[in-house]
Length: 285
Image (cartoon, rainbow, N blue to C red; front, top):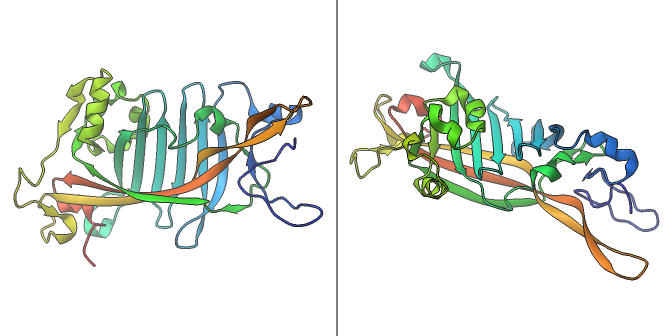
């Protein structure tokens, strides 16, 4: 068994097989020391290519003790995107820190948080993420699988001061977005069944409540309420574990974790804003 077998990619050829740099688990004794103490937070920095061709550095952090992972990358326009997966509470948090347009009356930056239910098999477990290592940190990575765009209607606001009951990470991740934390009614129903306090949720106005409510890109008055759209993409993340098979001396076959599969996924969020001024990126061009 090789220490770096089964990473993200393998070179193919005859004779001596040349292996591309890979992400792997520290499987041999000499590498175990790299993993640190059990349950200790770990961080991995990966270079990824954005859709416009630019290369950025993505940070992947894992805390198996708290059973959570976090991914962070900066887009070409300076926007900072963070995804936090809280496996313990089955909560997924997206945060966007968007640089403001000062000449158009916006603040230095605008923060948004979108909170949704975390489903099984969306991303690899925190324990596995904490063990990831890469052989060549200079490699620029692109996802092996592009998953379908997910369009989400965020029709409920989350009270920041009470959000700790939903996930302890909301307090840290969404501190800059206290008045702009959104979720979906269908996810709220799931959390309520788990015993979460419903007083932290407030249903937002919909088109049925305000007949004149338009999409922000169609609204001409910057001070009118409208439905904003924000799109983001996680360009590269470990979405699945790969398993290899081995045979012992008796001929018995067993499987073991030997690598990861990487994915890219885009999200589109619709949500209510009290004025179009808070959604200037969503304009008709």
